[in-house]
Length: 551
Ligand code: GLN
Image 1 (spheres, rainbow, N blue to C red):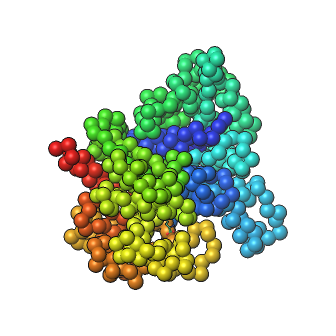
Image 2 (tube, rainbow, N blue to C red):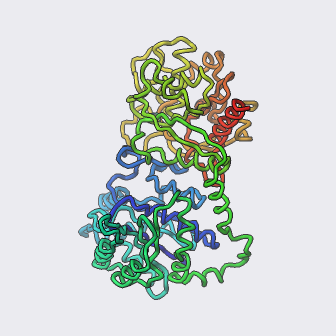
Image 3 (cartoon, protein in one colour):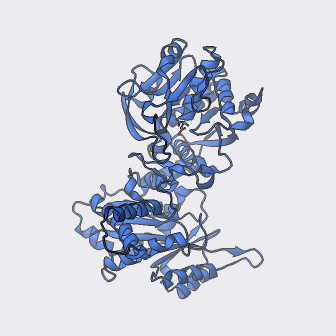
């Protein structure tokens, strides 16, 4: 029997509910349970693919090509697992199914309503994940805040789920994450917002079993007592989650606060453990490895500076997977990696690149869409190519490396990507053939993990140590094969391609210490204990250069 943990949020959005969920998943996995997680996003979009990173942060891509909220990236990284599209439920997906069924006549004669039709569809999707994965525990994080109109059908659905799986049998547990603010004037931790949001939950029939109080500092004993009394949860089920130095500390903080015990007790999980055969200590993945990771992460012995030239730099969440991939490298190499976020528009113009990139150790160009700032990225790539600056250029970055090379090495002054200039005489980057005739925007790019073949003897062959890899994609344009031979004859090596040889997947420059571009997104598959190979070698190449200079 699958058990469910439902995590809701109160008072404010952006409390780090996703990190609490991922951390709890990590702790439960470390105890030997199989775990998966579902993220519910109450917005009407079917998926996150059509949302602007400025508004919503990075769009994460799962291996099956579903474009999702960045929280699922955190789940994958913390749980070291690959999720699929079904693990993300949005209002758009739910309503679309119900409306399609209504049109097909599945509810013939009935009035189709939010309760029971929408709520049933929500629960059908939750059960589908539980049954297909057959895990011990499904974590369900409900996005948004209790009280939001959009969240209502989901709260009602999980209330029913709780009732259906049997209250007495301890098969479902509610965790409510709220904010415990401090008013500067008095310096006292205030519990009223928590009381109000728990009250709102109880009005709809949900009684939280655990309250996680997010606060600047640890919750004081008196604060815990108050929350316990007013919210009707035992004192030991009031968990303090103060601001942490890094998200990687959160699992250990929550463990120390007794969250795992609370959940074990609340769901009767020791019974589940007893039924597990062959659960030897060695088989159980304890937290030691994680602690080792944290120890290396928190005690760097060297330092490098990387310029990330992007378009959404004002919102750090827009590049969260890049940042995390670099964090994984930080722990592996014990190197403090300082990311200098640069708006690509600021690099447009004479000598701008020199000014901004003159003092960094490496250049990272992430993916992107739209023509704003494109010339700044091209200038930055030009500077990095000529000045031996280690460079990792991802997706749009990869495409613009080809544009830069075509303009400045092949001498095609007006070369461009068809995405930005449909009239260019040299469209070195053009539309993917399968994209022709597609006019719908949602979920129509080349998306998800695909096989890639690496050429032997290339730098990336050495990096990956394999000729066959699998990486995730998200793009509409690609290298125009008409220019391939000419680019290659001038020193640009296409070191990886699709198995049919039609899609160029990676490039590297001969005569450069580290200049690698990739059409796919290596950042999506980076994990704390397994940094993405391209990121890791990018970092290593900077460290080598540093050594060379100081030595
Ligand atoms: N805009 C480019 C394309 O669609 C690059 C996409 C990306 O960087 N993710 O091909």
